[in-house]
Length: 378
Image (cartoon, rainbow, N blue to C red; front, side):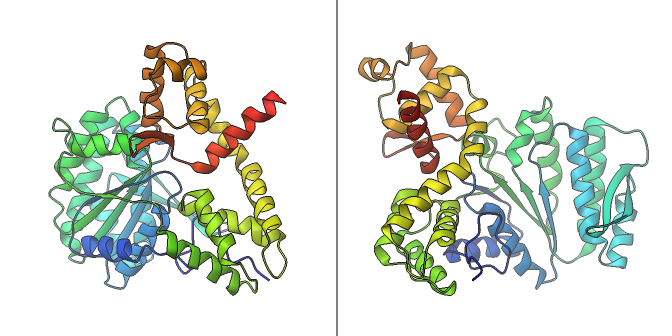
């Protein structure tokens, strides 16, 4: 029997746990040509959510464009990604494709045979233009296309906060804002997983994007709906998951959207016709072990002080990380060092403050850190 759970980006036709309110609300914003900034922790289902909305918008003849900015390393890279995705979505319609080439004449589409996908599309510039000027001309042409296109256009910039890492970030934000505010026939969704960075971009008075978009935070999934979803998916796969096991999964993962699919996937693989407590324990252990490569990469990017603090918070969430007792108990050193580490961990979205406590955002990452510490002590 095929496993009914997913641990990658969900196909647009795959069962989706709840989010009906979010789907309806964001679809309405897009249809009304509103700009929205969507933020949540990593692997909260943002990409799956916006792609479902874009599928619905296609039924209204919207042109939909999705641009992933993860790892963008220059203005030229960003402009190229926008042009490439723009042409990729337009080339399916000959008339729209010709119109796109007319307005985006700075970029030439390059279409080559591809053994896997049939064809691959990339872009190259038609003249030696670089930096801000390149992005300026790209957005200028894009805006003219949007104005003449007549039908609605919906653009998603995923991991939008990545542009804040570029040297010219403030100038870049100003340029984008000046163009986007004139695109009255388009809706932009700015999506990101480093919440503090993204919130600052759109809510600090001195930033160009200040009050330019609707703030839309995504929270954990509802408890009851998550429990029912897990039970229903097991049923679809021909197995029975008792309510108490489904409840344990939700509690253990904090209703974290990724793990609502990921952990049951591991349990489904090892269970018989009915899920047992032993299956639940083994499935959770397998999930931690299989995710360990990602967790190791997260730790490798931290300083020693940051690693010690994130480990301390995994063991003991606190509202007083600077107290003498807490510092001593976890060998954290000076208050100044903890202040710097806390700020960086918040920026990375590894931790958050909830109900006056600093806690880890990813509960399974926290369990991995606890097990890592225990293994070192053995």
